[in-house]
Length: 143
Image 1 (cartoon, helix red, strand yellow):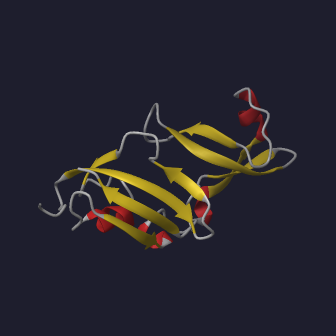
Image 2: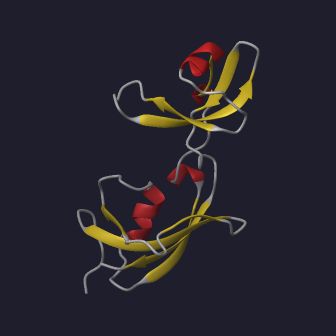
């Protein structure tokens, strides 16, 4: 049995939890996650954890924000005119997540969390929802 290496396509079963044990994602009850090592289809810490694993192997890893979704970036919290949001037929509420058009990729949407609503503006957070979080994964290399 050879160990997983860069360039290999792998299939993984996983469970992702926060430090307090809350599950944020899992492949349980679904097909295994398939990705090609080295193509940055998953966060770096997850990809690095799979390298060297053999079929049937299991491991648990803790991934700090730097190797996951990074730290939250202040420049990704932006104010937009409330009028623009309402013109899109949306009545914003704090905590709601909106899909907004990616500026460089037509047809691709980015999640934007409504942080606050002012009289004329809405403050949106475009950071990834898992930015700044330490993630724990239980991983099994299926194939």
